[in-house]
Image (cartoon, rainbow, N blue to C red):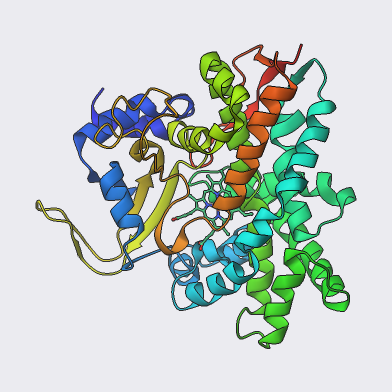
Length: 400
Ligand code: HEM
């Protein structure tokens, strides 16, 4: 397979099922290269890590969207995400990220451990002998946790789950008209929902993250965080914390059950969970792509020169399987020294929820293995046909 065929396969449903052979081909071709109409692709661990941290690179923000899609604000699903941290640049990004980081603290995350364990135990106890792991566990746990964090009442969680699923399609480079229509509807409904929740928490603050973010907005008279930014970032927190973590749990349990000797080690020694979770993140990243744009000409040496405004696609899944960084990269090995996957991105936009996602997985996997010692896969499952967010739509398991 030549590198152009390999790259093209990533944009086709079949190639997406297992992108790793294609990554090997294009990584061997070059650490970075341009592709017609698709910008530049970055394939190696070293260059991905370096470029993610480069302060001269930007993300596609509202001004960039204005240039290639003047009507983007009419799709409220797109608008709510473009208005968030994920699509902003300094100085706005620096200001809003500071406000978000001040509220979404390590202490707040650590305090979620018991909530996560309690919800995980309840879901495990309710699991039928023969079931779909995604709908029985991998979906409800992250949505339950993020709703608890934001202060969304229990009764609204199912409603949230569908809206969040409809909205994540805006993160994909390719989508159908119908998917975009559903994203618009979900965006409108979530904006209305959070507008109501913000008002409620303003009147009667609680201990939740929504109340904390409302306080930053109100205490600074909107200077720390404008009303629009407050709304967009609440929507972002909901969707960013949901499908990605669902994918981590689904993919992770599949990897563990396919490596029973490793699963036995984790069952016997739950303190190994952090290393296992890092290796799961490396081996099959829930987020496969991060994007950046050059602000000016960028000289990378060896005659590689990018013009200003060049879009770059960092292939995180390829970087995580780079043999120059990880010997024998296609082997699942939680004992690897110094595992540092790029699955949460890097630099100023490094995933704000990484500590929470890690904690959920570190709590969930040992609990699943110890409470369900006979848990096994009963079929290959069905991968979601997505390029950016990689994970299972269904994964049949037996608990008995
Ligand atoms: C950003 C991955 C879970 C909130 C990101 C980025 C990636 C990512 C790749 C972009 C980073 C970049 O471009 O450098 C993941 C994965 C997760 C996960 C793989 C689970 C396994 C979460 C959770 C939350 C969250 C649980 C919140 C509750 C965010 C936010 C940003 C972000 C707010 C934007 C940060 C910024 O632009 O400053 N995530 N994420 N994520 N993530 Fe996550």
